[in-house]
Image (cartoon, rainbow, N blue to C red):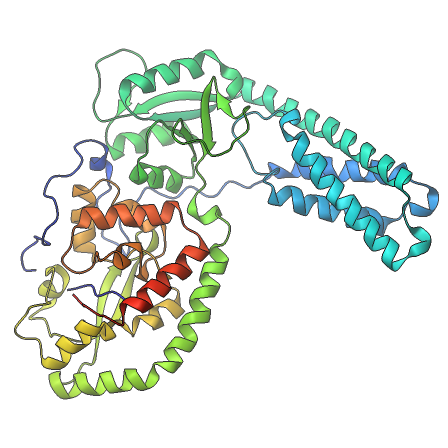
Length: 476
């Protein structure tokens, strides 16, 4: 676990005093409410884009079953094949909404492979449980060929209609990046409406004085542009986690042009610019498993740690008097505020000191019990209850107080983007020694790297490294 601290001085130790001079200034200020100020979240658009494709695959299966003999034209056979096809195609991302017009030939290898698996599995199951209805090689080949041909034809109709709609009704978009390249990219898209994206503005560091699309440099200008132009897409020519979070909070589809290739088909391009969709954290696979891991580990850990919790509580009560638990407001996922629990290791002079003092690690008012709890990180154990409540996760960026979140968001580009992920007891930054009075810029970089490359296995690795680190505790 890690130890965070509760300055009369706003200086938080050795962190840079000058941030990124450009887009970092777009970090929104704090509102007088229970969360940091963010633009109003646009209601999630209903994901009906998959319905026509699912219907096309189902119709292809029905046609394939129709070419079989009368004895094999069974609804349970069709249902089994259709269910497997939809499951496999869904796992392959063949129903995923895409803003780039897709060609059915690009999908053909994936469609054919998964259709083959579905028919082979179904044929094997039929042969095992109803030998009299077993599908012979010729019938199986005929059904498979009909299925693939029908799926290609039906999906071709769906994609053709989408391309015509995209050309006739392009979606408004903002281009994020250096002004010169952004203008050239926007001009290319403007001349080729078949891609279905119509740039209406550029998000940059400063206006360039040229005529054409306006250059937006503040959160307020982006807010007005999104609302007035019904912006649905944001195309990034450069990485900017803060702006990525901002646009995804609006409900915009976000795209990355250029950068590292990620195995997308050759057809996924915007007039020769390779692109890939930047999937919001909430749409990533495995986040439910992350929550299950939190509960599965935190619940037994809390039960096993009960004797230790009682001893710590008794030590705090004897050394520092009443008030064993320390409660403090912290910023969680998407700027939501929650009450973090810790064992009290120091009694602040007042609420202002508690909210704004950066470090108390060397405070002479701390008792021997308090020093021991902080040195061993045992003061963090009550946060297992925060994990069970859902305020926190076992692994994630460490939560900070609103006072410092507001400061760091203004100073460090990408600091606000840390709140895309549930905050955690430990994280990638902490297992690399970035805890206590260490560089905020480094922590921010590690936290965003963790979020961008998150996997359940990495959470397990970080937990194991944290447990190993407790053998040689340093505290903060």
